[in-house]
Image (tube, rainbow, N blue to C red):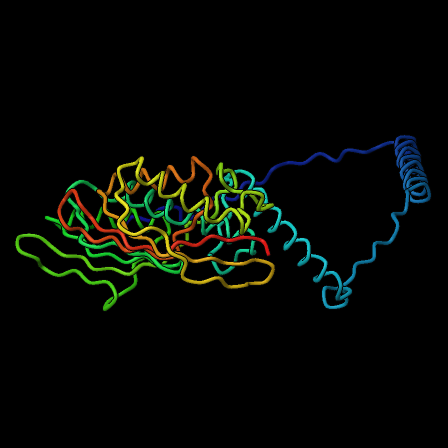
Length: 305
């Protein structure tokens, strides 16, 4: 058995006694006492000369005045309205539905409604999609029956309409059915075109409205413009009614014609170019052939009483 480090040798070291003279002890004590006096004096001086901060009072959240939260809420509302105003200035478009517009804004919206529908379909309907019928009423709704060879074309059209804030209603108002080798899409859609305040024919002061004495002349001008654009008038404008609405008077006329789709679009554009303040309150286009459609419309002229 091997034992490792179990026994250790005790080693005794010699020590010598060192004596310190009394004079050395006295000097060391004096030095220590002096250092203590200096430190104590410094601490007292720092304590008396230190600047005392003013006491800070805080109000607990539950004790704050109730008007604080209301003022903050008002500030947020003002900021939000400023944002809306800035957006309107940048875009130039009043993004409200027809029913939310003021009377002058609504009249301007009505005059632009048919043009807005034509612009919508020109921009969103791809080649390969044809309409059997197209109708609009009340400045709030459009309806149509379309034929297309593929669902992809139909999807492109719907996406374009939604981007323009024209949303087809769900079934049964809007449905897709097989039709031969393609598809038939019947739809009813709510419209919200907005009012472009920068448009050339928009006048918030309604200075573009005609007087009652000028109505006959304006209807004749409408027929002249239609014929100039290739629209064949089959029934001259005939007055249907004259109704008072507030400080305005509304005159409604029936109108019938035959044209192609491009001719109808040019006719609507020309009415704006020549400043004829006529609104299409209702219209129905029915395709007879690819190049011929019939037009039945209710025209609306507004005058100030």
